[in-house]
Structure formats: structure tokens, C-alpha cells
Image (cartoon, protein in one colour):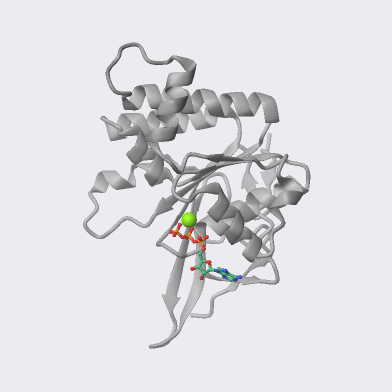
Length: 247
Ligand SMILES: Nc1ncnc2c1ncn2[C@@H]1O[C@H](COP(=O)(O)OP(=O)(O)OP(=O)(O)O)[C@@H](O)[C@H]1O
Ligand SMILES: [Mg+2]
């Protein structure tokens, strides 16, 4: 049976590139360098789904919720219209915040400083609680890199695998924002690329000596014969739109 498809609401992207949308339940990486509008795009997808009655959860780890809301307001998105259907879980204070939660739920088994394992257990419990309470269908994690840092993975490979399994078991469609790895990054930094069901790359492409164009490319989408070509990404009047890039 074909899976239900989640619309991104990016004009030209759902039909022409994704052939309908993101298969429900997929774990998608939104990868790009700083300033390529990763957060804007992820929020936009959850926002438009929330407007249509599909609840979401946005977990912010780098940017405080206030800053994110200010940014999306500047883009013309009315977050207050969806505040019930799209809550923001603000973990931008990082470990400090999670450690407070650990203390609250008494998840500490000894009096040593909280370890990654205790933190991840608390984070999962919090997300599960919100899943039960709010029945969200879409989850954004901004960013995967910040989450990984906070949770201090001891065995990156195994723990990344475990986390992706947990996401799939949640039964939601997930958007994981991730930074473009640097040239010197070890091969293991690409673990999540193999584990993800889909990868959307965002970047600024130089088109002349002095000008740049936003580009988007869907490099992977399991079970979809997606269009892998480069597309220009435009943001105008509160809407994202893609058009085939002319080579
Ligand atoms: N009204 C607007 N219209 C179009 N683009 C805008 C507008 N306001 C801000 N931007 C662009 O949005 C970019 C920032 O978007 P966003 O925060 O989503 O990027 P990001 O990839 O998440 O960045 P970071 O790596 O810092 O998290 C800015 O660099 C700016 O160019
Ligand atoms: Mg961001």
C-alpha cells in the first residue's frame, strides 16, 4: 500500500520534484550551510501543515524560540495562528535545560553529573509525552548537530542508528536540520546521510562574480522517483517556490 504523502507547500516542489510529497513516516535531513534558510524552510513546512490541521512539534536547540518566532514573523508567517497546533520545544539552553528536566523526573540513578544516556531518555520521554498530548504528525529538530553535541554520543554510529530507529517508531514524519559538514569532516560524519530516508540540500550558488542564488536539491527520497535536479529556491510574499535552475 502506498504511503500517505506529506506536502511541503513549497510551490513547484511537491508535484514536480517530490511527485506528490514526502512519504509519511520518513526521516528527512535538511542539510545546508549557515544562512541557507534551513530553519525557515522547516518551520514553513510545519506551519502550513498546522494551518491545514496537521499538528507539528518544532524542537529548537540552537536558536531560542523567541528568535525563531521573530524570524518567521519577518518572513510573514503568523505563528500565533498555529501556536496550539505547532508548539515549540525550546532546548536552546542546551544541557542546562535538559538537566533540569532530568532532576524533575528523577531520572538520575546516582549523584554523578547527568550523562548523555540520562539526557536522551528525558528528551525522548518529553517528546513522547507531547506526541500523546498533541498528536503531532510532523517533527522538526533544529539541529541534529546541536542535539548530538548535547547528548554527547559515546558511540556515534550506534547511537545515531538508535535515534533514527526511535524516530521511525514514533510514527511521525521528521525533518532533521543539519549543517553542511566541513571538508575536514571524518567519513563517519555522514552516518546520518545513509540512515535518512530523504536528503534535501540547500545552498547559495554563485551565479556571477558578485551574485548568488538560493538553490535546493532533493538528492535522496526513498520510494520516490524524485527529480534530483538543482532548483532555484525563492522566497517571496510569504511563500517558498522552486523553479528549475538553468545550467
Ligand atoms: N524576508 C525575507 N525574505 C527572504 N529571505 C530572508 C528574509 N528574511 C531573512 N531572510 C534570509 O533568511 C536567512 C536566515 O534563514 P534561516 O535562519 O532559516 O537560515 P539557517 O540556514 O537556519 O541558518 P543557521 O545556519 O544560522 O541556522 C538570512 O540569511 C536571510 O538571507
Ligand atoms: Mg537555523
